[in-house]
Image 1 (spheres, one colour):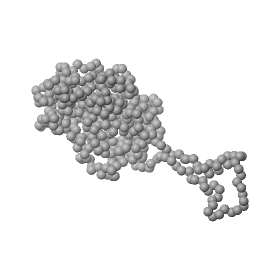
Image 2: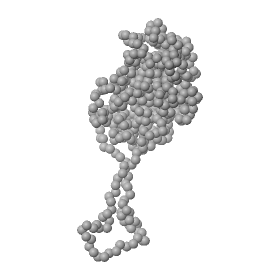
Image 3: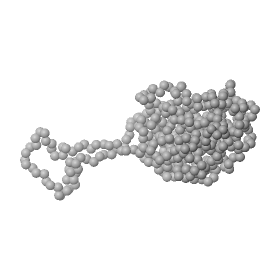
Image 4: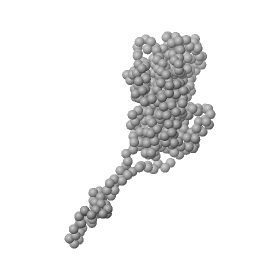
Length: 436
């Protein structure tokens, strides 16, 4: 691919002598006539005009996409980056570079036609289409497999390569609903991307289209950089942003025993569920949107409230920046909406998602077939009576609840970030340029 760096430049003003010459050409009658003594100029003297300096070129200052107030950006901000040439910029090593992801409701193993047709009919210029199945997976964790759990490292690298992400690239997430975009935001954060390099487009591509129009046509892979980036380049997994089922059980036990003051936020559907994880506070999944009804988190035109309004909502719940906050829901998707509001909009530093969440994991860890220490229908771990689901235990040996073997997802992802099966990370200076 052509890697020529295209920078927008402007000319500086000419030197003082040059300006004077231009003034004379413009007909300045008050300018004094130069005296002519008839002498020939000496060799070390210059003819009139020879002291003019050559115009110098200066690089225009580009907007810094990492310097936004928070992770929520408006269409006008993205449009400014478009106009400045930051989106899919060919200078892949520069900090002032942006890629745009467009996530829709199709799954990796399901029908994609409708979502791809929607992309063809209109998308943010330069956007890269991905599906929900690209950023979650069926994975073994605890005693059994569950889905949707966080995407694997291999899945993340495939998305990064498709989008042309490089080590200094800022990623803007657009999509069909806040439910999908928030999940992508959390997934990127978990896989080591710092908060300042992940942005969420308020109102999605619809809001951008209303203001500036959308681009039509199929996705052209040639618009993105020919990159071989890996999340391993981020060097460290943000595994403190995610809890597995064993970790969640321990957190609940610690709360029950008075050994912690964690805040657990329940993000399932309106109205408040009758059965919740012990000590949880119900947090309406649409409360941080400009919609006052449940569909707000699915509607592709839904917008987020501003930071002051989001903070007021959590103040009302008694939740503050000094708290350790855990969010969960039915599948791990709505929980990422609260995560984005707290991490992305308010910038709170101690927020995590219980990934498997209530409906895909918690309700299975009950009944006589589950070892006593893992059971959530005992030990005051659940408030209310539940219609418990059966579990298909997939491990050969039952791990101890507090052992590293109880969280297979985190162990695998930490190993992936260490470079297992993904090269040695020595492709260039300072840890490699990862093919960018």
